[in-house]
Structures are given as structure tokens and as C-alpha cells.
Length: 278
Image 1 (cartoon, rainbow, N blue to C red):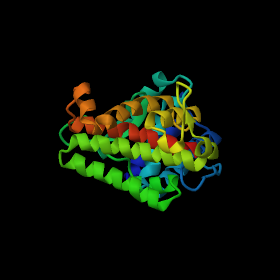
Image 2: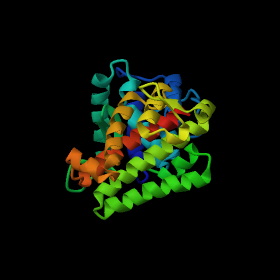
Image 3: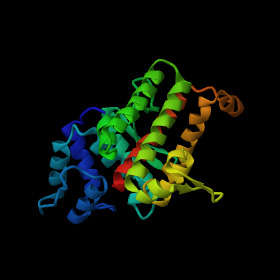
């Protein structure tokens, strides 16, 4: 995602503030909204007119793709509104009207908002790796050598996608997600490092042998990953198992470009959840 035009960001600021509208945010509510999306600099509302104040903040970080990704998705997130998806969807539609000239759109993937790019020839959103992926992974992973390995997996998945190796691309995406979640959990939970995780059947697995399903369930219990992102990520896990040809034969799927894009989409929500958990 490239930098957004200042006029686009001014319109986004008006939508967030919704002055005199049904979902108007006061100054302190805007502050809390920005905290939830981890907007850079921990801004404090200064009592000035809200829309110009917020627009200036957004324009200041117009080239921060990760921050804008989190903010735009949160505007249409059902978690943001008491009325849930019924309230969030019309707001997301208005946001998409604002984003249309930028060739961007927010869509729902398994109930979670994900930012995608519109192609020149279709209204279907295109998904690839989350924006600013390298910097975001390095903030989530303390060990730089581990981060290098994880990012190499993500980069190789993109290379496979771009050259038509779609089965290998979705295997790479699943491998990247499993590795990122494993290091995220083990770096932050000493009990998991020492005692491992317990599966549904009561069997205990060491941290080194914990698979993606077990890690997802644990991260969900810790509220590091939301339910919808967890559920859709389990489909990515199924596709990752195509590393065994017999699994793909039994599943009966021939992956194509849309399959790969579908697998990238929940990675956006997954990464946003992990960042919010911090």
C-alpha cells in the first residue's frame, strides 16, 4: 500500500469522528480508538476541533502502511460497535467509497475486516503479504535470526505465488504463520517453554512439538488471536498440510491464484491481532 492522499485521510478523519452523527466519537473516544490501533506516538487529544486534529495526525503518518492498515480495518471492525456486524458493514461501505480512488477496499474475511487492493480490471480485492511485513515481524520477534528465517519463508511464498507455484505458495504461508505463532508464544510464556501445551485429548506436547492447531487454540485462549481469525487460519493450516501430496489428493484441491490470495487474507487479520495483543 502506497501513501494515501491527504484529502483521502481528511475524509477518513471525518468518518472516524462522525461529528453530529449516530457514531460520533468525542476527543477521549478518539484517543482510545487510536490506542486500540496502536497509532504511532501515543497521541493525546488537545481540545482543538477534532476533525482537523485527527486529519493532521493521519497525514503525519501517511506513509506508515502498517499503521494505516490497522486503522482502516478497525473503522469497520464489528468489535468496535455495540451493534456488531450490522452496524460495522454500513460504515465499511462508506469507508470503501472514500478509499475507491486509492484502489483500496476493506472486506470481511470470516467476519474480520481485511484491507485489499482493487485491480484495474476487476472489483475483486487482491491480497498478498501484509503491508510492511518485515518491520512488523521484527517488532513481534525478539530473536533477529529467527525473524530472518520467518521472513524468508514469507518472501519465498510470494515468489512462488508470482511464478505460478500455487501449492508451494500456500504451504509457505502456512509454514510462516506456524513459525511466527510458535516464537510469539514461546518468547512470551515461560510456562509454555518449560511445560509445553496440552491438546484436546489431554496429552501434553513439548513446545518444540506443538503444531499450528494447538498454538492457535492456545493463542485464542490467551486472547492474542480473535475467534474469526483463528477459525479461518485453521483453513490455512489444512492447506499447509499439502506438503504431503496424499493430503492434497484426499482433499481434492488444485490451488490457483485465488487460493493463495485467500490464504494471505487471514494473515492480515492474524498479524493485526498479534500486534494488538502487545
